[in-house]
Image 1 (cartoon, rainbow, N blue to C red):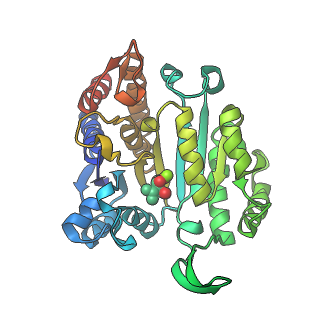
Image 2 (cartoon, protein in one colour; image 1 turned 120 degrees about the horizontal axis):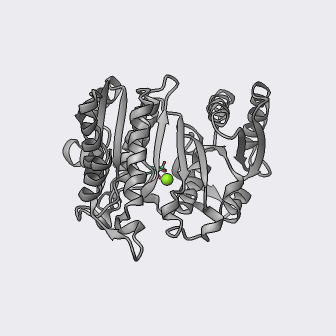
Image 3 (tube, rainbow, N blue to C red; image 1 turned 60 degrees about the vertical axis):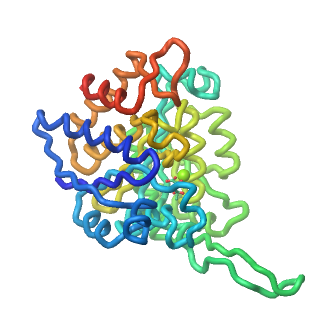
Length: 357
Ligand code: IPM
Ligand code: MG
């Protein structure tokens, strides 16, 4: 059981450090993961001149799973696009064929007040967003900025291409239907078919795939309406499935329903169950190195790794149970702090989770 650990940039090393300690604490139960660390993102650009260097590629390909912190930082914003940290992240997703991104948004009862929505709107919230991760406008060609002749003479135009093949849509739809089957059997597919042909195909293929899942109730929603419904009545959703771009946006929105983006883990899976596990939040350069970042999303990502790639359901549930326990004890990092609770730093939060295991 080999794990490639990629701390990345910003708060990445701090939060991944705590997740690694939690995994190590499971050793006494006979769970032995072999962990090896490599560089991805800005730190890789600094050390090796590229965001997804060959050494990292080798390790990531050979591993059964990848545990990632976050990449990026303002110091890299002026680099050419191929050298930006985000390219490293997109590169490893594509390289490993991680097309299925699972982003659960679950509200812990203790955090109902941390949400910007009224507690009664979010109480009991449990949504799974299934985001396609290796296609769409993120990877479509042609792309770029070039000179073109227009009504005003020659000028620059920016180009990206939204593109999905039927097989790409079908395989992510299957993942979503299967996930819905294990939950409340309701799937909402999100598109923009009133304007975009690409997503008309999306709707047609998802509808067709539904034939194989008569036990799952399929609905469709336009993305603008979905964005609105998520804040109006989020509990109407069970599983949502959508493309790369819409999924990026809707999953950030859904995260805030739960109080903090610092709480949410994610899994990105290939066709065989190999996965990359990462918190859905970014590298938070403003608080990097201060020991105050919330490590829970990364710790919960490690739990997802044990469940999905290694089939260690009991160990995964134990980590999740430990996280619930520390929240019930009233421990909070700054992002989820409210009066009456106890503010702790990154490492103390890790300590508390390990103690609760
Ligand atoms: C995410 C992030 C990435 C994305 C960025 C950092 C490239 O926002 O994982 O949601 O857009 O996919
Ligand atoms: Mg995002």
